[in-house]
Image 1 (cartoon, rainbow, N blue to C red):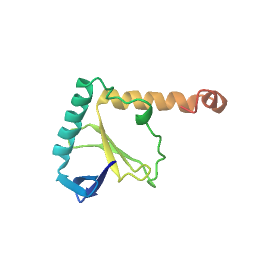
Image 2: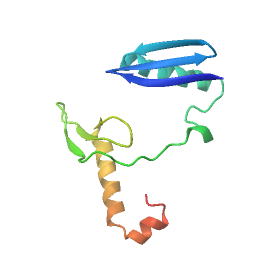
Image 3: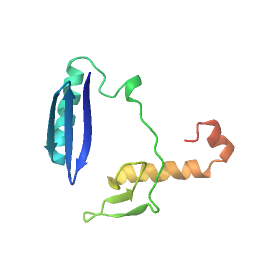
Image 4: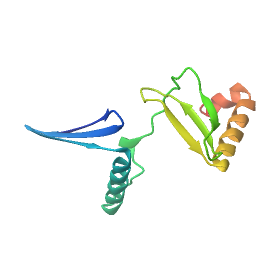
Length: 124
């Protein structure tokens, strides 16, 4: 059985493969990693696999682990949210205006609902 591991090497990503006695590692910058993800998604679609996943690729909910969640704007006036979640390194989300409005409105609706109503709908 082949083994695959993905690790961070500074600002780069290392993708390592091992099958039996043979092993290979590739270090790529974030741009190359995104290109690889797009290419793999296209290949999965081409062979009839659902790129959005099935039972094996379920989304995992992670808890916010940063002490603060920073909200601000970038140099272009776009909303930015910075936080850390689970074991992931800290990250920032840049949001378009409509995305930021949707998130803000949805959170307000959730928070304005009574707790028993939220719990009966899966706490989200």
